[in-house]
Amino acid sequence: MADEVRTERLLLRRATMADLDAIHAVLSDPEAMRYWSTPPHENLTESETWLRSMVDADRSVSDDFIVDYQGRAVGKVGCWRLPQVGFILARDCWGMGIASEALRAYLDRRRSIGAPTVISADVDPRNVRSLALLKRHGFVETSRASRTWLVGGEWCDSIYLGLKL
Image 1 (cartoon, rainbow, N blue to C red):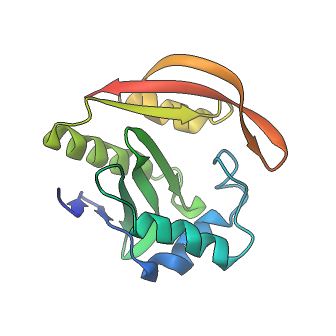
Image 2 (tube, helix red, strand yellow):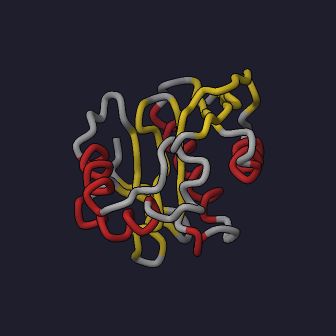
């Protein structure tokens, strides 16, 4: 499988530890992390552990990419654990179509390699922007569940979505 995917504006590439400062800026931002499965990272060590797991991930079960925009790591898109997709971007990149462009490129890549045949997503129902993005790319709701994630002392619900590739 290719380690890079290029679009008109973006480079999706495998993570390296050189991405630490840029990724920490995203993962420590309370607004960017509002609907993530963990609270914002309080220190660089938390982000280093997170990034190290991405760098060292077994490619047979993980297919995750750094989103590089204008030479800067601005987030991630992909499946930390196949087939569940996730994405996060730096706040200064919101509203620019970057998430849509990255997700489209990632899904096209998955289609080109032929497996798995379904990609899934688990989204907090309050995350209307992510839900809208996924639906624009063809994801459909498959189910809902209450109190699925305990994040920073707050119970969060889930909307599950799927996309047949």
